Length: 340
Ligand code: 6CS
Image (cartoon, rainbow, N blue to C red):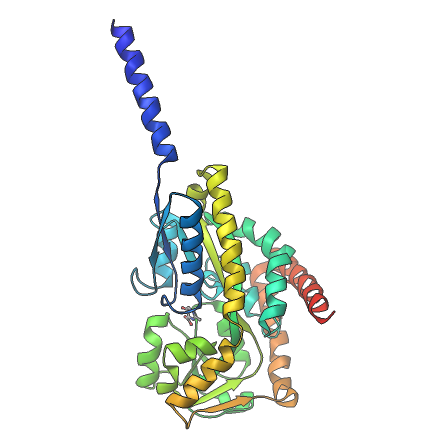
């Protein structure tokens, strides 16, 4: 009789566990921007796709709801968050090789070529996932967010004119090296401190893609936008690795498909966004200047970039060098594909 009870209990437990495994879960996803900014648009598309193709629900946490980028990364590594979008601008201090995205003039500024690069790159899809996995993260995708422009209080066209100008950077050692090489005084800060620091003149400049300069009203606290063509903003979406590895193959596929759909969507969404953002800034502040440096004016910045590339290799050794070389190969292939 007792044996019978044990059997019933064991069977009941088995049923309960099966029910748990198949149950609809709520997955938490944090990102570094507002709901209507690029990372938020990506996250909303991802959520819609996952929810349309599974019983799971995605709960979105925009910038500020769970702290700064460093906080959400800790939460994702600890499994409190299931998904996180974090730019290598911040991840670079955790995964030094991710700083490769800050070797100036490595990435093209055009989104279409970059989209093809991110889709097909061996460095992105083959090499980086292993480095993220070492930090307990499943790298799901990387995508571009637009050409990086520099906003400053005074105009500049050369490194000499950046002398003593304090430019805020994300908290990434190589980005600090870049601005040193560009002649400025780099000041790494979390995003939340940037507007106030510009307002109080603790810093006199910062860099970001045009949509972000517009949406976060950087034009209220700086007067000049300069495009030196040095970079395009990259971001990455990842999952907590234990969580991801513990999912059924079916759920993993739902996630991967949703990421692919959101990737295509975010590339289309950015078509014309840079130009539209310039128009909005002009309308809000007609005195704001926009300067695209000529090839001649860019030459000293490009020269400085060689020094930064050498620093990257010093910082990351053979692993970094292998990633850099693979990225150059992948970028050349993407450029060739987009010009044919
Ligand atoms: O500069 C930053 O810190 C921020 N820039 C963008 C475009 N996204 C999020 C990030 O925190």
